[in-house]
Length: 197
Image (cartoon, rainbow, N blue to C red):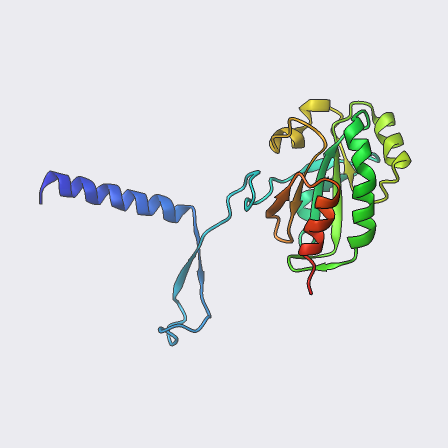
């Protein structure tokens, strides 16, 4: 064999090994031409974690006003709006009535990609009293409010690349980002289009 052929073979083999190590194999019970063989391996490609449409949403684990920890992964099976805001943000406060209306209308709905609609509000506040007063004043009635009280250094906001607020992402039942920055009627339109008919 020529040296070039050996090098090429080694590169291809190492590439295949690297790709395989990032994928899981499962046994398929689906009918196939090899129906009698129950040990057919199927390569399942894992969804990439990230902040783009189609990515698996990064985990959020943060404290609520009462100190209990809420995680994004605990919403599995539901459509979830992760809403980044702050009590001191005028545009956020102006947007809150539309978010409240969407929550009231769709909270118990059944969607193509989730059962029920929840909101996880992530505050970029630094003052817990101002944060809690804004929740009450704007009637943000859902129970899922979190913050690490670090302002623009909020861990979740940094992880999601948030550099202006209001900002949000809509996540399906499997934790996949299906829409971003839905404001006003755009939020209701997105929820309406995902309803199970």
